[in-house]
Length: 170
Image 1 (cartoon, rainbow, N blue to C red):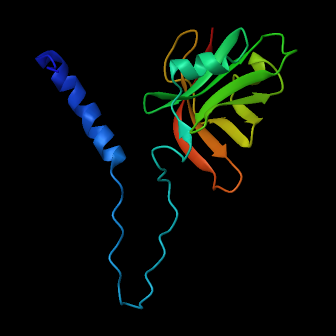
Image 2: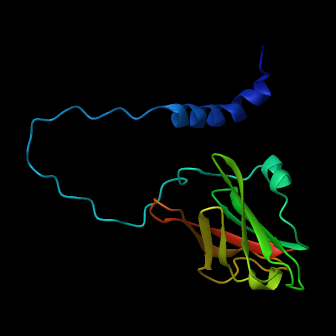
């Protein structure tokens, strides 16, 4: 199959990323040294994504179909990681979805749309996702994104955090 020249350049970065992601880390060579190495101090560095959490795809969103009139989403590195929907009347709990290795995971929280505008905690199926706003809106308009942090807690795993944006609106 011949790929047109106009498509080759845009495909090159994606191909490189794919090949890097598929490479397995090489084990370290055995050492006879018995000197103790200093342990690294924990820092703000986080992995690109936690084990088992993936970007939401249109098919994932359609399959999970969170209900509600209005929506909020958490995005980082140009990928949507959590989508939440809720009604203004707050009778029905807000619903959210994330995508794990096994597929879509539905989460929820008490209250409707108004309860999630300023972030909050969504729980379900062994996952707790907390959105914490970290600053004012970065743009003007009806639904400007706000800087936020997503913290994901799962049994048997350390909490995972990533900085991104929380956007709510119609």
